Image (cartoon, rainbow, N blue to C red):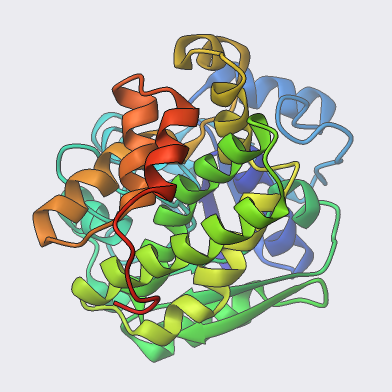
Length: 330
């Protein structure tokens, strides 16, 4: 197929490598001309994937017309920037298969990525798929075995995306639960910030295991309330992605939590970090969404308070541990 990947960060670049290795004609688009010029010159995306060579078979461009010539658009743009990217750069989704690899909930609108694309670019459910799961770009680019899920309301589209991406080091399953796949990918980033706070405070494995487990319960409650299938959250887009994001040294969201717990401000972290931690934005949106639908999410609530209301991390942890006792399943 002729496929364009929108967004030349680590994840977009890694997916372009996967698709090119599967003999697709791949264009990697970035809005920044200087970024594309640097990568063209060296064939290495040194800002995001140092040491990984990008083959000449991948076309690098900042021209939206070249990106628009594709049959499939792969969205690897941070969630909060998807709407302006389509509004400001002449990107066109009409008549194309759209594959989202972005994980988040839009601030203000509280929309999932499929809803943003429908609203901003007219993308219909029957041509959309979410590709998500435990998949750090640093490992995918180096061909370490990775497994994800392609979710679409159209099983045919889910299977088409599955075939397009699957290779010996990148195994893709298919699903029809778009809501569950998108929410699992978005909310796990918020829980990962709490896991980083545990690391930053010097707490132990017991604490992190508790946060992962109870965090999964929160993700599932929210997902089911919004129409997702509960079993989705025991799969790759739920438990799988949650584990890797809470535990990995590559996880930007876990790292943000760790730095916050050690006393850094969000402004300091933003200055020092080139890549976007989606969970910071999503923590605000997920908190608002949970209130809107009436779902109790105590961990997500405390992450929001730490990030946006300057609540001390030890106090937030104490409040979680001293809440009213409950049955495990509620």
